[in-house]
Length: 275
Image 1 (tube, helix red, strand yellow):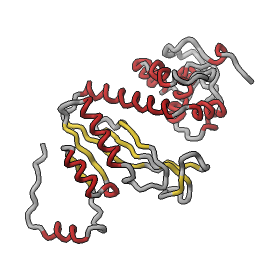
Image 2: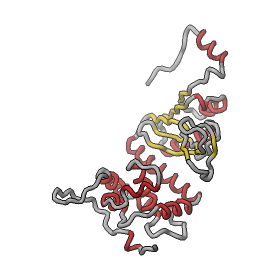
Image 3: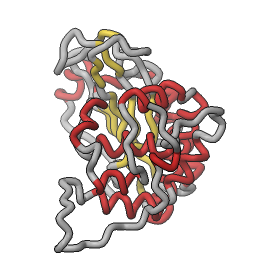
Image 4: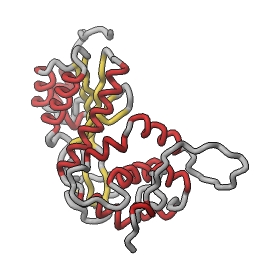
């Protein structure tokens, strides 16, 4: 059934008032904090610009559908069909600015219509929001963590492949590489990859690109990187050293037996004192 925009959207985004005599109960009252944050950062308007180049727009609008996915994760759900548990919740509807939540088919079509240009705009938006926050904090030292994460899918989704999957062996998955800012716990950027690649696949270029972007936005800040043994290679170590980045990286001694013997045989070790 096709609905009009007036039947789906709501004009008011005001924060709800606490009324003890009101019998309309909700299990998701914590969303009011995120509603205030989204309003303060003007997220809806930023999202609208990310989808502005798309010719067709669903009745609910791309910003509301994108926020519905964010809301879905905030509430602790994973599968789209789980929207049935909160479809009629008044707090969720107010958070999204909708009188009627989009169904699974509508959300799926909207996600499918998002092209590479949309994804690039969203990435730049998320990076800009994080950089704005870091400029307010004015950190002297910035610690970046680089690590991959297995995202399983139960179907043959586009771009997935069977690879290392400790939790769900044999399932198709993605294996994106994330750059996380340790001081705030926020994701600065990600590198999308299929599930059958090695941790170091495309890692060097992605790491250097993140460092360049951070230095341009925060001149003078000391940048350090933390990586696990999957990224240990002469190429990455030399690239970090040439870039002037302080880093710590785990060494896979099972691949460098002689190096392990050299370290164990040393009597004195020299290193820079912690600042």
